Length: 121
Image (cartoon, one colour):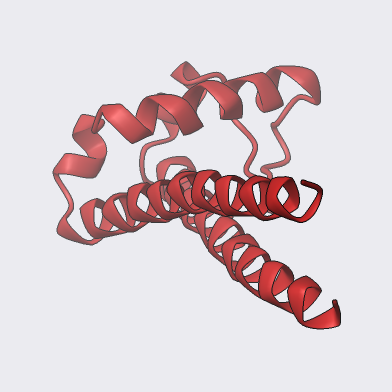
């Protein structure tokens, strides 16, 4: 039985590492927006990152702005990112990490559910 726990926890821990990488990638883009495109950052609602936050960030409004941006950036590329090859690469890595996390969690949950179902029947 302990091997079953290891089989399920190791992939989940790997996915958590991918999730944290995605958070860090988002924070790097957000910090670039703050440092290089401050008016855009303010228009976006002064979002806070997952691990990084500017002094100007509000508590609730900045977190709501982060939720909105973290979804919007998955599907739309802002002009300030499109104009920089380095930032565009960071955005692609963020999108890839989010894709791996989402697909990985769905696959992991499906396998976990299937194994638990088989073991209990």
